[in-house]
Amino acid sequence: MKKLPIGISSFSEIIQEGYYYVDKTQYVHELVDAGKYYFLSRPRRFGKSLFVDTLRCAFEGRKELFHGLYLEKHWDFDKTCPVLCFSLGRGRVRSAQELDMNLLAMLDLQAEKYGVEYKSEGVANRFANLIRTVCEKTGRRTAILIDEY
Image (cartoon, rainbow, N blue to C red; front, side):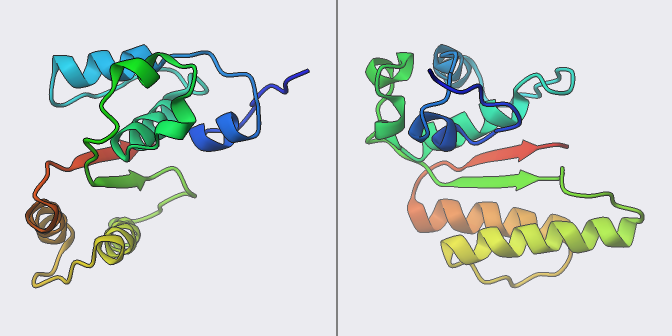
């Protein structure tokens, strides 16, 4: 019998470890075809983090994870795009300075992943520089996924 994925928000872990998964990948396809920017507001424990991770896996072209799911036949896995993922769900932030430090650390991790060196200071400037440079380096549009805003 399959296990329930209680508390697991990693799409790849759910698929690879054989947990139950209700296929919502049709919504990935619909979102990407229908628009550009989305703000998903749902109650706690409603699967937002899992959905964001599913988006990441689709954009990264991880076709093997979508076997038997809607996207397997309705997504061009050869058209990958760089993905910048940020989650603000870790711990409690007690000041603006602490928030800036956390954001800079997340930006640095993403910059390292794509080999981006900064020429600017501050969260907003680094974020803009990261997006622009990743787009220029890869020649592709970049997906930006923010979880636990």
